[in-house]
Length: 528
Image 1 (tube, rainbow, N blue to C red):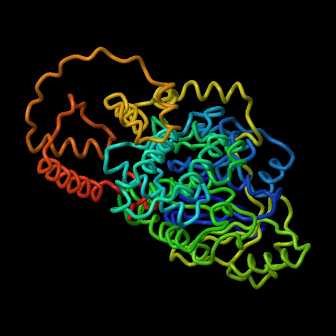
Image 2 (spheres, rainbow, N blue to C red):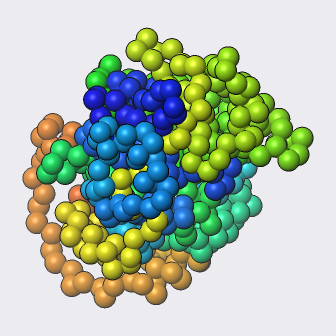
Image 3 (cartoon, rainbow, N blue to C red):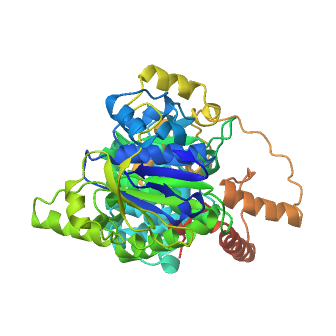
């Protein structure tokens, strides 16, 4: 609940606990056992940021976050808190919020797609749980695709590229190192499993533009972007890696803004333990770097998990705004988690923090936020204020109506399948039937089945000689857009011509990648 330039989180008989908007980008944590009220806290904070004019992204793991789109109503619990703490005088008012529904599978929201080129080999290797050797082969495949203008958009592109690189490894191993058939076969098998999890729906175009998450409605409220994650939660690798891609892309592309009166964007990362489970030290350092630096770009990150122990210490230390719901201490492991949670707070002399954590009721929490000087406040036990929107899921009919009237529906609803690596390898086969000896049989069989009717060949017109601006534009167009100019009939070139063209192409590709690799890959997808 947003009032008097502050976000009201909770109340007790002696005080109200607020989150200061100008310190909201110092990140935060919402923790607690299942069923203790984390979802209500998440909704209250999302509502407040929206009222403040800050766009929000969050995941709906159980379907009940969708209630943000519907006007709330009274019940005994809400009535009691409104009267007890005088919430109506503090700005409480039942209402609905502007939402945009998203779904990686396109069933309960606008489809979200990401190209494999944007995801990059490092994050893709995380989804596929590849070994170091297998990741090395995948990295080579992406490098070859970049340098030969073969955009990897979707899974069929990647499978075609893997087969192409393996069957022509004699051409590539001298420059990139060994390309093991066994590693390539493992990657191909993993891609089949990824397809079964919905990979064909997720990887493709039109690719998501994160600026579309940063919208305000006509009244100046921040749009709340809700990712339906009920089905996605069954594929935790895709879920965590997609959110990690979002973080790295935001970090890489947003400009520095310094200190602001309020965040530019707030990102809630639910089930945060999925991000950190089996995390390598390399990933840990990169995530810590993002969390530390992304606040200077106006982004606030809020991790949601059962216990602070789920979050690595280097990252936990940067989460200045804390909301801790109940944790049960039934086992020695639980007792240790309670102790860790208690130690993350600035102690209140009026009570034992660890004891209170074990005895909090539903909707109650221990809260500590940053004060005007950026110092954590003494922890307070409070009742979390109730949400002003509907508690629970909305009807399927209402969800469908809201999706149908979305201004972004025309942009994302339909899949686009432009020319990319798969089609370009097909063209190579059409132009040179002898290439069958160079391409894996699996690729040939697939492309032959899907090959379009052979077009009537027309005599190509003489191509004009490009100027310097045309050359630069073609290079950048190839790297940024994955586009190449159509070529005429192939002619035999001298060895000198081939050497010059190869050197020029390599130099142009290297320069263009240096300019664009941060945009295309984000922090985690950079090639080495």
